[in-house]
Image 1 (tube, one colour):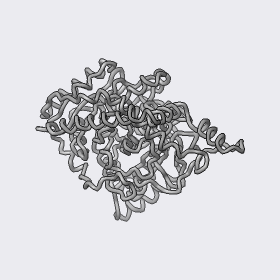
Image 2 (cartoon, rainbow, N blue to C red):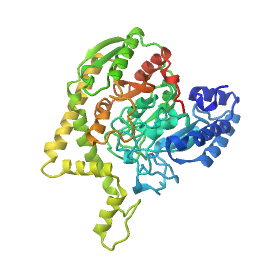
Image 3 (cartoon, helix red, strand yellow):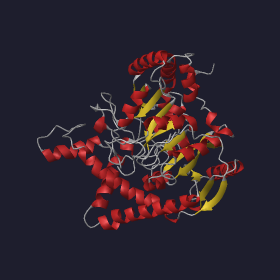
Length: 485
């Protein structure tokens, strides 16, 4: 039999329900894999081995009774360390929350716990989800399993690396400007950002509240469908959660995309994109045409301003959200003073890393008197224009296709200029500004480094982009490749 950690979620689920393997065996295989490769990859901030085995034993009882089963019952998954887990450290990759144990579970955790899944650990990330490489974690950088000298992308790099290295069968991350799709691309995974409001943000520690969305990493479109199904749906505790009915994502995987209209945005062939990425993307677009899709160019004229608008809106929201870390309520607190203002100043000086401070300052400046209209208000107007571009495109097309990242995985420490790092998200940011769904899927390799293909869908059309992803997988084998760890 294939090594247990190499099974897909759907394959492992079938074996568990047939009682051919146990949840304890499956979990132990992944814990053994963690022991073998985690010292090199550093994907986790916390490995919850005792909890995982306890959850696996409980899953085996459910499987034995045959009652209340779910496709994720007994399946080992990893959780980004920005999602609240009751009584389990949730650090957000920051010294500020290094010892913080939330008194409640995020809604997604409540829903996952109800499935009988197994949590193998919390995954490393750029501090407060600010970054595109997982080098901005306060603890250590995570390494890309495809080349340990390279970054896995970010900010959900730990979640991506854990799945790519076989330490979890799937994982969850958060995507504010590409933080699931970009690491998905760099680690050869399916990385899905749902429509804004499709998944509850209650218990997701906020970076930019109008942009953040939780989504899954998986090895296949089918696994991603299973992972999304488990967490999607309305939540009364989240005022931005949508009551829109949830589709059956797995049932949507028909294997055929004949007649689907797919647009190719002309503005997504930007300067600075590696030639191999452009060449591979164009070849994959032709594959979609061969599968029966109708391919045509489309113009999204305002997406060229997406990065500029995002890096005003996101830092502005971050400066507001992170104001709560003042050394009084929870988290790190500087105590070596009797002066309240010095205590607050030093708490933030020592508690936050350089990238977080940079974005707080950018955001505070953009919101300040005299600059609000010139920067923040104008960026919000551009955001509306970007949304209108997508609205017009989706009147003619069922989905859009583009590169997911302008480059393959870059070496750790290679990009020191913040602006160059921000451009890593040039293809992913517009979807967050518009609130639509997007997915990065394995699209090929350049010198053994993965290249991702991005599919964008209209609001609540996750079923469409997953259907395209699944059909693409039927005629390629990129998603079946493993790094040589």
